[in-house]
Image (tube, rainbow, N blue to C red; front, side, top):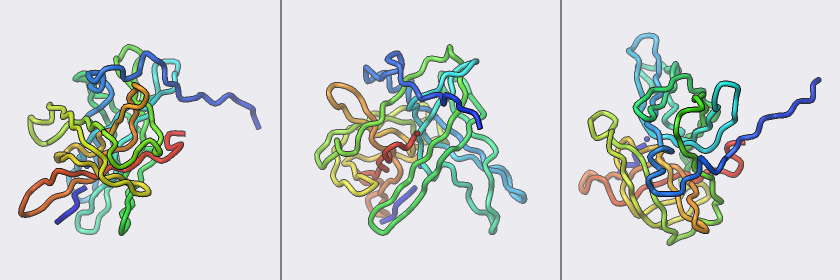
Length: 237
């Protein structure tokens, strides 16, 4: 079995979460989850692109638009190795409403694999115009999650084919809760790394984790389980 891995005093602007950007219907997820691409450059090899998902979690209002914060998967920001050469990120972009937005900047990227628990999560920001319709996912509290909690996974799959235009809405239940990861009783597909894992609490949608690993068996193929990293407290601050 294998684990795959998707000296002045000034006022500091705070990340806002206006009601206009709240997920109120299941369909609103379509404007919160993004196709995301990271391009890695190498000296002796062609550029390589990583494709995965990300989702809006809040923004800061600027003069010309919004500086958006997005959470994704940590391994999406890792550049591979070719003949001992480590690449560097030269571009982070998202696709929303059939428009490509470049200029993303990586703020954090954790990809830690432990013997019993792991953390695989990233944070980046990108500037968007005021006119672009989109939604945010509120970050929930990890204490709301327990074995048996019903969760929803929403994201795009298979970036190398036309199926990348298909968003999946997967419903599952939490089977295991670790220090930084949970196991969910539903399968995901290649390309769905970075998809939000959300639950309803008091009638509102909250994101509590991000899809990070699939379980694969050479005999059975993709198993009906996935692993998600829990979002650490104060991760976007």
